[in-house]
Amino acid sequence: MKGDLICWDSSVLIDWLKGDESDLSRMKDIKTVVESIGRGDCRLVVSTPDAVHVATAIVNKAKFFHTFDNTLLSLDGKNEVEGLKITPCHIQGTSAPLF
Image (cartoon, rainbow, N blue to C red; front, side, top):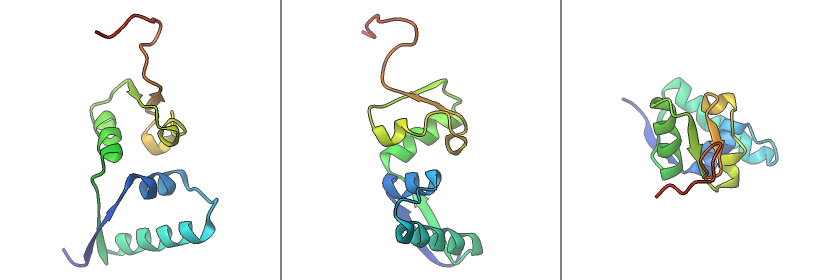
């Protein structure tokens, strides 16, 4: 494979997934990198805990992904996470303890 290897942390990945336009220069930079990846000029690795957890939930077709991270909670049910239900940590329909 040609090109440099680029690693993103979860904040960059989430901004890209959400299409966060609140900082246009930052989004422009992200889009430039994505275009470079698309051309094969560089390669991307996302191996942060948040990204790994969300990807694991999607791949394993989890019904719910529990988190207290407001950024991840804002992705609840969106196409960017393949409709994954992202909620605060609780058991649906009960208040029974887990352990």
